[in-house]
Each structure stands twice: as structure tokens, then as C-alpha cells.
Length: 124
Image: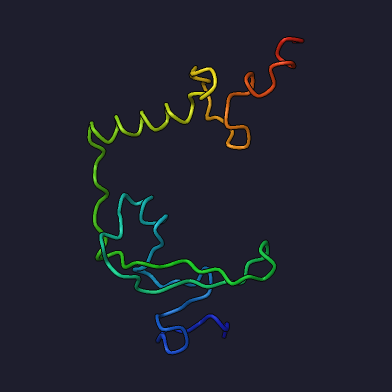
């Protein structure tokens, strides 16, 4: 058996399964979302554990929630749509020239590309 297989929770405190071996009736947040569900305030029921190949062997964890306790996702209201549009507009607005760049500004520059590299824009 895998070192991450602990269905009773004796070793890790909650039931633990290796990646890809979760029993039926459990899902991660992302899996719940694809089904149009959310955890709905329920506690974590189990977890998946695996050793990462990318992060130098670091142990990764994904929480599992029970499907029978999950609730439907709340619908977007007009106010939420407006707030989301305002947030995205702020991410596209250059603080230097105050124009909508038409794309999300790179955080590495903190401004639109023409403001960050004005000499290169004049040559072109």
C-alpha cells in the first residue's frame, strides 16, 4: 500500500488517500465547481496526498468534501456582475496615462507597455 493510504485517519488525523484513489462521494473544490456545487460550510472530510515532481519532492495536499453535503453555487447578481466589471476595468487601466489598455496590465511593469517603453513606441 502507499504511504499516503490512511482511510481511518489514524496517521494524518483525517482520512487520507493517494492521488487518484479518492473513494466515490468525495470531490475537491474544483471538481465541485465543475458540477455547479460549493462546499457550503462543511468541514474537510478527507484529503489526497502526493509527492510533487515539480517542487523537489514536496508533499502536496488536496482537500476532499462530501458530495451529499455540497450546496449549489450561488447565482451571480447584478451587483456582483458590476463589481467584477469594475475590478477588471481597474486591472486594465494604466495609472500613468489613465487609458484602458485593452488587456490586463503586467504587474511587473505596473503600467501599459507604451508608457513603460516610450522610446520603443516612437521608433515603430
